[in-house]
Length: 587
Image (tube, rainbow, N blue to C red; front, side, top):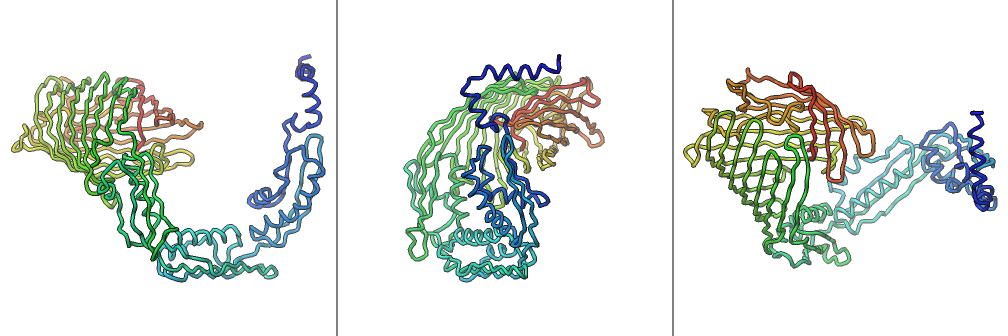
């Protein structure tokens, strides 16, 4: 009896259907059973089969195909199949079509011999005019997608023409035209001769730039423009100009338009229309990490203090471990997109299991993005810190000049599959210049991400070294510690480092740590990860006691950025496992 239950349920379900719906399903049985048309093409490559289906009008029909429509579609199928094969270089195919009606739908079986392919015999591409000496066109001709001996592909022939026309427009050859464009196919010889001749005409130059905006002084906005009227036209310069305006944070909408219809004497006028963003923006957010627990952030920024482009910002961050208040005032210099001077002030209170610290700071920074892509930051910071490390409580005053180089390359700003980041910094102080101690410190941080199949490989390295005569005089903010969410997982925040005679962690002069991690997607926004971390802070190389942590976790690509949940096991640690929850970018 059990074997008959499914059939019984099916019949009872049909009896409960409305009569109109039963009649409808009877007229269109393919819909009732979820059937679909089938087009079978045997013994050919996937490329040929896909191209034939893309050309066939029949492939766009459903199971309810009426005979009056089927007949012309089948007549057209002959020409459509031949066109699909010619596009891939097969000019002498032999094929038959077998169309059948089934109880629920229809099928079309194509028996096909595509025949031998036509191959490119000669490729005659000539660039005439000023573009003949343009290195961009020279490089393009050396990397063509089609050459002598290759199977003829119509799409690649069209791709060559499109690339030439596109580069001509982008490079300012606005009068360029194809004087010859021919594809001569000798079917009997199974050979094709391709001829493409482009006359570029003269190269145009940048014309005057007209600005449409009233939020800032024109002299400020014009400093974004990295070219002068009379320089050769290049659309990449216009794209870079648009991106610079967007990246500045001053504008909500940016339009950079070459006025091709207003060209005079080969000069292309440029129209720039800028819509300023709202003067004020506000920040309010909450988050959580295992290093610092729940955290709340509040902030505000004035993007337009005046027409000279000054701006300021303030941010407050509160957590169980630390409290931070930061103030900043920025003034654009030189190229406003790449250079600015900033004045900063702040207060930080940190309470951890290893240190207590109250830090007040004032500073000035000069940031400039170099032509090489590196960002250089020079700074002068005054800090006053009251701190406690183990049983030592002290106070320091430091005037620290600093220097930093940083660069990031990534294929996506939030969820990269490939990219890297490198930060190198130097800072120090002298007792002879408003400081209670002398020291010099260098730090480096490196991040690297690369594809690994459908997943990723993530590498991290951190290093630092300090030169100081008496280590005990270093405040806690200058010392190195390891352990935590972004260091050696499996250990607590700042729980690794040299200890005193009582076993209290007091930090070290030097730091070396690293990590290797692999993640692999298992759902649209989710990945699983495995990792191994290692490193420690130390005072002498022969005392470097490397600690290791291994574990696994999950990653969620949330709307606000990556969120990571890890379970780590500390090798030689006191805990069996430790939970790590972090938010933030991978690079």
